Length: 355
Image (cartoon, rainbow, N blue to C red; front, side):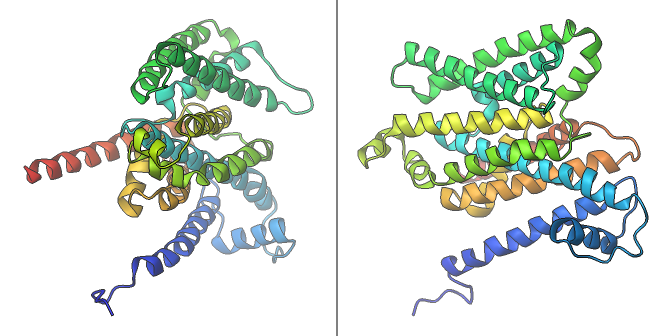
């Protein structure tokens, strides 16, 4: 019998990782729902959630209005933050693996910029549906994300019909600049919508409710599950595109499908939360340190870690200066930048010691 030094074999350790991760994730969500500008005890929160989700719970000693705060304000907001963080982190992990670039995330392709352009255009033009007001902005953001992706891939194909990684990245960066300049022009011309556009562009979950959760949940669940089924193909991509083709992976088709799924996830995330940076860039690096590079572990873990990170940063944004609230995009950018600098510094030091 091999000596494992008293440690569980890796396969058995993996069996414990996911249940513990789910428990941690649920605990963070519960605490985030409990905390806010209005103090609600953990026991009251527990009873309200039991009643709202399962029809049970002792509501006798709970003050009037507390149930509304928990069930109709905080719970949908926390769920939305978790889905957005998970979607952006998963998209970043896919792009870094697919493009073999540690600085890649959804914004590298220009998809985030395209989605933001569509959302801002929707706000400025007042595109709304009477039966579902939030649907206009969401559809506009997703549509522009798709159109951005089609434009980028078409232009890339005209330049390089092999759709090489470097050409995709370069085209995406150029398109991001173009979309950003058009978005800035719309902000200048937005008139009465200026305050709404500016606040949205900094990223926030303020005022979001169950309508937004209903919009995002199907796209998030289906998109994430489909992406995770491509884990083996992404493992093959880590060997290089030529090697992946050699072992039977249809690299062009896989790349196109994953890029479209990333565009959908980013588009719906941008539509409900605004522009939130650094999540798709930093969280996959942190997750990779924990799970390694095997995408069968990396992708599900990225969903969980990204969700936890976004829930905690949103909690910080609404409690740090309570009752005042500032955009969560400010918190994620500041926190993400600091974390990324630490990771980059440690990586460079490790590389320098090798030589």
